[in-house]
Length: 252
Image (cartoon, rainbow, N blue to C red; front, side):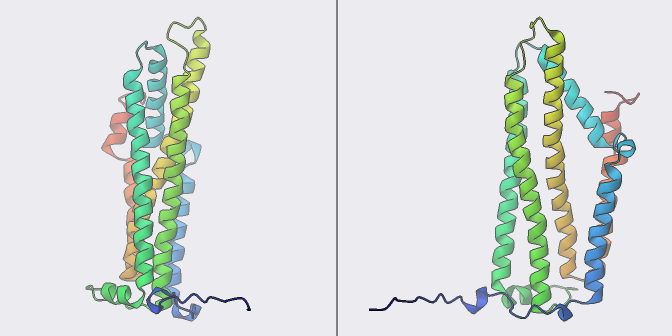
């Protein structure tokens, strides 16, 4: 008896378009994606330059993290510090889980194909899209959220390393004060990496909101991408919270 061959049949509603023809993507759509990538890359490049970063809210937050860890090293009872760090760990775990849920929702949206496209295009001002362009838009959002998941997951992992570093901090009455302070500063640097990756994950949520506007019109996508970058610029460099963290003399 010969081997039995099985053929897996995939329902038509769960298939992606077979004809991924680039002609279905207009020049305006390509320009909108190019603008999105360009403004975000430019913002990330400029905001991380040392001279500019030193004026950002992230810089002053890191300054306070360093002060926190130094004060923690001088305390006998560090229970409160552990609880505060535990809240940070849980926050990163929450956002990582949220990213997975969003990715799953987008995958479900993609599987519905024409039905989901018809529902979205029935909304006021929503632009009509070919099946190919619709799939590209959904996959585009999925890629952003996958990036967010990896950032939050890594921040979650780094949080565990920070907990270990905090637990390994020498006691407050350790005879080598320089070693205790050096360990506290390294712990603060690791905690800063946690905040950095978590911040990149949060920014991805902003970028996803801008990407949603692509379903309405490429011009709306361009405007939303610019608007998001302006919001990030204001909050990072000109917000009231930055001024509070900076303090009156530029030091906490």
